[in-house]
Image (cartoon, rainbow, N blue to C red; front, side, top):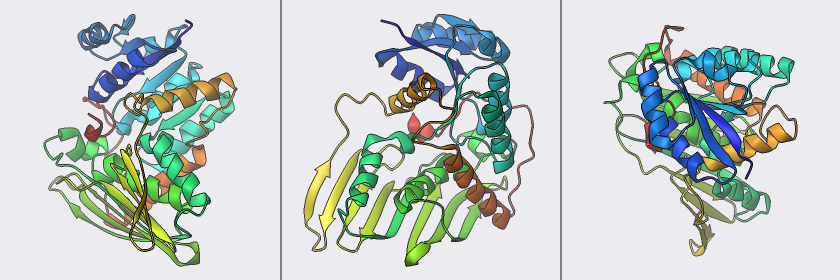
Length: 340
């Protein structure tokens, strides 16, 4: 069988979960991995039976057999690494958050458009079949018109140094808050028209707990909550004029329940048993886009990435949080530790 060869930039925890997923996914191969530490790259490659291993990211981008590069480093460095890959002609799938602000994300997207090279954000939730089914059900009037959404995501992650470090764009918002914000915007069909918020800061000056209130057209409302200080129930509740929908584990939904206006459970749906980790949908989408000559995935358009980061920029500005970037990053892990 002809396989789609994936290069993994970074050799941390999240990269390992992706590699394990690709090993189990028909038609894909974790073909190459790069780390600034060649020993780490070799250990990672041995663990996941990866053919090529490199001691620099530039070597990975120069490999002629790599067909897509998955960027799995801290989001503080995504933009520069994505631009390096795109300039080398390599399609990229960038772990969320796509970057640490809108400006750097726009630079990457503009370059991808100029070079006509695929560039997508690996926002887990956008590719989830259960989440997309939820949106289809809402379009089909399953609970009437959605009027209110609540979504939360939280874990006790204060021991993860990357998440508390301003120099690595740490904080609850970019690592966890982007998930409930994404879910809400998928349900509401776009960004809010007004936002109010508050946050509790950690001693390092970044946000540890976020509370966000949003207003949408036609009097619709939503609240999002994120925390790296303690675990939440990680659910989403969608309240409509004729019922409600509940989602468990909103970053990668594990259950969808529909209730009528009398609070009777009318339907419960779980992911397909054949699902590996949920990551596979991102790579299947990226391959489809690349084969079709598209420069963005259907599930996560460039405008979706920019809308999300614009909200994050606005929130951090109101919280008076800034990042001392760019700096040389030391960790090679990326994405949320909740994916572990």
